[in-house]
Picture 1 (cartoon, chains in turn cyan, yellow):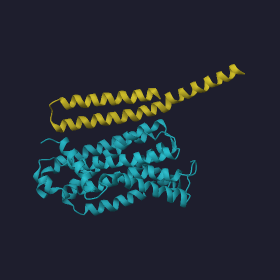
Picture 2 (picture 1 turned 120 degrees about the vertical axis):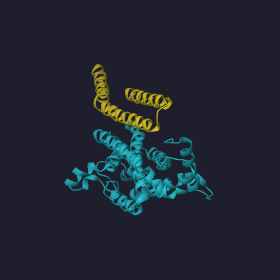
Picture 3 (picture 1 turned 60 degrees about the vertical axis):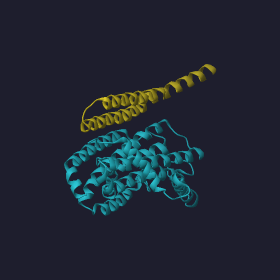
Picture 4 (picture 1 turned 30 degrees about the vertical axis):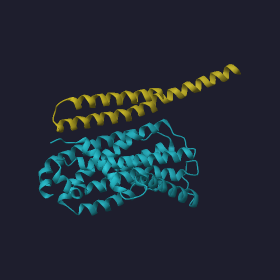
Length: 258
Length: 78
């Protein structure tokens, strides 16, 4: 069996977008309107109403940039994982009819969420340019960090999608874990307010490395921590290999359970 | 900056070329996916290290060159 069927996956991505906005008058325009409204809300509330500022950063929108630059990728990451968790159960009617490998299912969700992330980041970049923010040469790193992030989400998502077939409670557990994970990552607050021992262990949180990289590039115009990114790349590929091995081990059992 | 762009373009070109060559080979999908994964891992690490190298060597060199030429201009004028 072919491991990945490219045409089928692209068709699934297309259908995913169509299903999301099916029946609405504006159709896929909603994928632009949603992130735009989110960015405007965060900017108006934090910069204008609350007048939130970051120490060491210049500009009226510094806190909004800090928040949005990590929140948009986190949204893509968490939605990818939570949707992947139930994809095999949700699409079991398709899996039983079409000869498709299980890893293709989380992959189409991953691609669909990546497209949504790119749209959001494009709108955010327009907002940054309009507010007079300068981009550094480190912005060239962004597509590669996005790639690393979505590969990590894929590795976790594939494993969870296979395990959820046997343990249905995982869907609820993943929702709770993602919420805790969000608040254990300095996305809304800054790292400096954390106690010393937490600052030392927080580097083991992969989303912290990613969010810190985005904030470094978007807000501070400086190079992210490269040793951390290289370590995260190695961990991600280790997880990908593990998830592939789990898939090989569980493939026939998953088919029987579905 | 130009060295950085050339390095990124070279890494991406090499990566896509190798992916294309592996794609054309008739080997099982299990092996192919492993090779794709390995190539992607090497590509990402190379890109990150290129940026580290840029920050450490090329950027500093550029800044010093600019500063020294600016000082030289001032000195000549004075």
